[in-house]
Amino acid sequence: MVMFVLFAVLVTLQMRENQRLVESAERQKEALQQQEALQREQKERNAESTQPEGIKPQPLPSPPIRPLMEYPSFEPLMQVDIFERSQDAVRETRIDNVEIVLLEDDSVKVSVQGPVFFELGEAVLRPQVQEFLERLAGVIAQTPYAIQVIGHTDDHPVDTEVFPSNWELSAARAARVTRYLIDTADIDPQRFTVMGRGEYAPAVANTSDANRALNRRVEIIVTRDTMEPKQEPKQEPKQEPKQEPKQEPKQEPKQTTE
Image 1 (cartoon, rainbow, N blue to C red):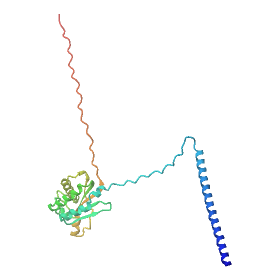
Image 2: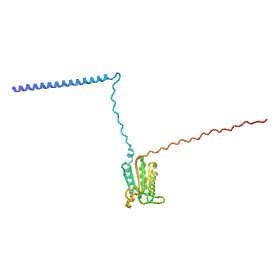
Image 3: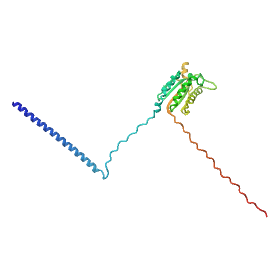
Image 4: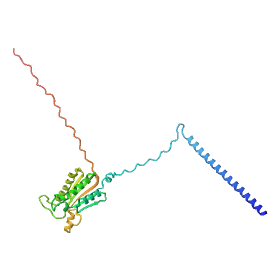
């Protein structure tokens, strides 16, 4: 019984001690909050005392917003997929020996071997290739890009009255393809660059007839350079020179004889 009473007394004392500690912590917390409030008020008073009369403190300016970087518009690329449309033209016309390549700068190169376009040593378009060029011209007409048409030959020498060398033959073939594209889809001729490389830029070594056939080709490259139409200078109307009024000759007075 004595032990129980002693235990009860100890528990009571511990509870009172805990209550005292809690109350002391709360008083310290309130004192700390009051001290922080006083410090804030003192800072505000000091700031107001340093401002001239009639001038309100201005907010700090916000950091400047950096403009976004300007990137070239890819809207034409989204409208017409030249690579896919060119492949469609090959499939639909069932033409052989056509290579379509997407270059590193996103240009599209359509390479057609010479035997498909022309007879050996000639620059007259074959009828069976015209449908393919019409489809390709329709694709090109829907884009604003510059076009390069490059003619190539093999190393077989040419020496005729029309084509003294492979330079003239390759240039004539490229020009003939270009003219057909322009006339078919009414494309602005300013977009085209026509070149003849002769036998000096072979795709493969001219070591066999099969390789020479691969080198006889015309390349149509749809670049990513846009072409703006040239504005012709306005011609002012010619002004006719002013005509001065004709002066009648002075008449001398008649002399009378007495």
